[in-house]
Length: 488
RNA sequence: GGCGGCAUAGCCAAGCGGUAAGGCAGGGGCCUGCAAAGCCUUUAUUCCCCAGUUCGAAUCUGGGUGCCGCCUCCA
Image (tube, rainbow, N blue to C red; front, side):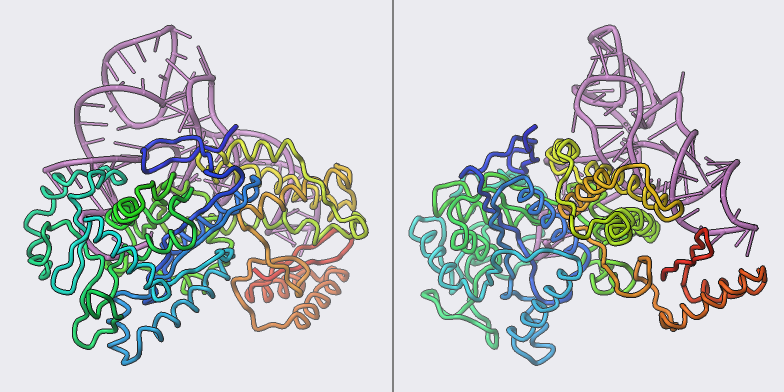
């Protein structure tokens, strides 16, 4: 089967072919760095991280670029209210972004261009648009003339007439600069600086770039005139991506991207989560409560184009599901020694299963379908592990188990799902709660309980178990009187 | 008002014309001093409703209903 993707540009699912065989140039619209990232940003980054991982796994060389918007009204506003520079705000939240993404296991992009580092490129592009007649200056601003670009609206499926019908009465009233525009739908490529604002010199005077031009400039500088895949949140399709197309394609006369992919929004309580609605959850707040891998699994369970509703119930389900996968992934950690894998680390994976996985995921990145295969493998390994634990031997051969484990680990890696291997405790918990008891204290109590059980003093044994349970320590009694434990 | 998307078990979710994946939760059994974990087993004659096409439809067509997103900054 061949990889097919849903292209927003054609509104159809179509076979994917890169411009240059084996190579993919991919651009993701990143974030405006004026605050901590919320889980909507998290979903976007996670989804495209996995797409990128999958494409690599499928054998493509992927060049992946994601931008930071560090020139923006909201950054300026925050800088002014805190009495610091825009740079200071940007820098702070770029660092926070990297911290959050590292915790979520999002791989680093190949480049992170910033608006402040792309000023020349943006100005060149604006000049080019001006000289080609697509842009006009107006009192220190420069606007893009939407009517000069006949294909305007081709991405979002809008016609200028429809926009007019919807926006009539709103655009004129809300935009005090409207009088400078020749058409209400023209948008700013360059904005004249207002007094006290951070600004940059240009041939149109002191000012700063408009929002959309940065991506047009960055794509061109980092990846070229036509790229393979341009991705971003569905809410960016209009006007941001539409305007990017208008700018880039008018300037180069070539398509900006062959495939446009958009991810669905995150909802909370059935409503879209957005800054403007005030119902957002930041990634760092969420990660106080939940293992990053739970969040990853939760998000990957829903197809990337569908909306996903964040609920406690949903996250609880993902937590339990993650425990199952983790059990499988830790198979080598927990049983490899017993199976004598040390000098012969398993390297072989099951080609048939990998083919099944690829067939499913090739269908517009059907991650949920792919996860079903991971669960299949993880459950088999868990079952065999349980046999090893209780009976000292498994049903399958060491080689078979090695292949299964290796296949699972390889496919889980495509999804960025990795258990944290902890030094403490002899089984893995979900890393959520922390207890006041040290490992030594737990161990001591367990030894007391083992002794009590030997004397058939079950009241005392149960008392100790309850005490540990209250601290979030779970016990597993094994045949032969051994007890394993983990933190819940 | 315009444009677009989605409706599948208690919850989440795949499925894209051939007779309902998977996860979570639940029921029953095994194991256990009792648990926990694990194992086995079970849970939608049916896919929002109504028509139609077809030998055959959750899947295609038409018409309803409901929910959501975009049209303004937004991942």
